[in-house]
Length: 318
Image 1 (cartoon, one colour):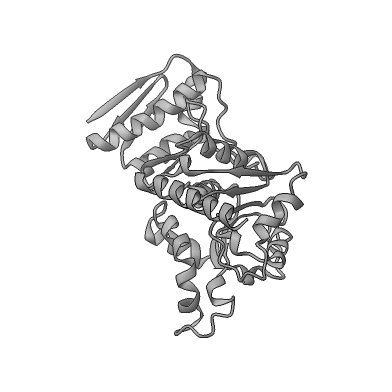
Image 2 (cartoon, rainbow, N blue to C red):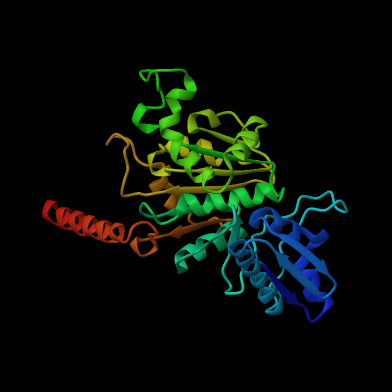
């Protein structure tokens, strides 16, 4: 099967093909198609589904260009400076990524605000219940930044709170001990990258996944750093994490303040920073709720039911 796109100007061709035909190469890799770009014509050839997916990819870029959206900054040989991390804007005004041949984008207004915050702020804190895309969208933004060389590495971390950060009683070596707590981060990665890609990035240190205790004493430069399950961070852990960020780095903190597993004597560092960091301009808080849940439709109803139950219980106890 083949599809043809006819362009009306050099500006459209430049936007569609990308710098040094970047978009053409990206489409061939992601959608497994053959793309021939000649002046005012772009031809896509391959299996029907792949061609249709690639056609949608190029159509979004072209429609965005016609509406005046700027293409993302690409690191080129002509500049030594690191480009600011940018995320592509779709024709709808949304933000999307292309990983493993599929589009990852916001499915609600709050998710869109979350993605825009990650585009414009150096530290973003996403707070909301399970299934609202907090970690998944942050991971998509991080993978995009790594693949386009906006950052040199991704660092993913979360507290292993159930084991008290000690982990000593678990069987096996260190990797076996921490793996159960970090597994969800690997799951999200494997949904966006091939298994061997994750292995290659991990082997050369471009992707690092570790408990938050391993961040102590480090300065994280040129990195996209994601702290997941932050509701289970203590005051000291949260302060330590926030002071690790170095030059040209971004930090995303995600958590659900309704599911805190810390001992009752310890206050959640995520709850504290809502007041401590509220007035810093370079930091943005995004709040998601049950309407942003993208899991099974029943999950929204379950979250509502629990919220209702907990409000009723709090009223009875007061």
